[in-house]
Length: 345
Image 1: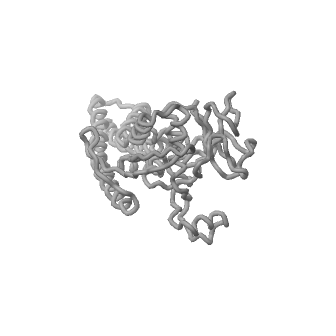
Image 2: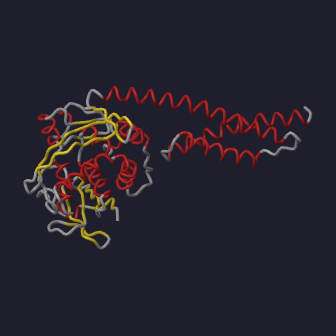
Image 3: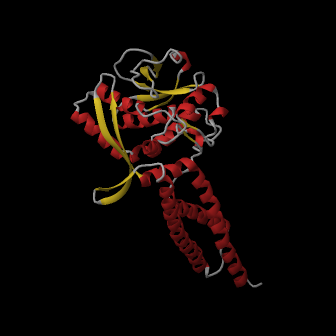
């Protein structure tokens, strides 16, 4: 083999290796970070191209031509894959919507000149002082789809010492910008009812407390007789109060506001997300002893609280109606067993 043929062979091999290395790097990035495909692939290709440039040295005068081809072919491949992936995701989203239509109330709406399919719920509830509120809670179905895909791909390493805090943080950060319609409706109620900081927080929490409790399991929901007595009692009265096959046994805020099914930490994360948006100093507290999750809020109040970072976080039950700030049931009221897993300030 002469030198020219040798260098051409190396050039062809380099292109193939660059593609292979790009795919390997992309699979790693895609596992760790939820970013658009085209961004992930471009970053992966640039890294692979840099590595191959360092490894493969061209001595031929046609060096620049080979480099041009090596760069052009993956770019064309990227465009082709991107078109196919976009078409596939559109088909998946359509199937996803068709599947969810059986359980979710839909309506079409025009928002800022664009048409959206919304999951819509009209809720009416009463707070601790007997004040009645009514609002329409909407989320965009395309945001529900995106949030669900993120949830499915979410990864928390086993080495993470604060597993639940890391999980809640990733979930709320992903969904915080997807609840804009919820924020607008709650803010409208705040203005209409002239609510101050304390009563607005009570309005938000009482809204979530009013939504019936539902178990969220990582595995499929089974017959009630399989579970312990406390779970049996609830499912025997409300067989539909269970949603299964949810990773980590939790729903994202967007998913919860879409199907209104949530357990304790599903609720604490949605309230944490909403109150964080409105500037409150909030925390999520978990207890392995009680096997429960509650909200903590740093606001002038009285009652049960937990000190964290020099501040008092008053404990707030989110799964039952009419529980006020600092008031927990006698079965859950020892602050020693509660630990802050996530705080926003």
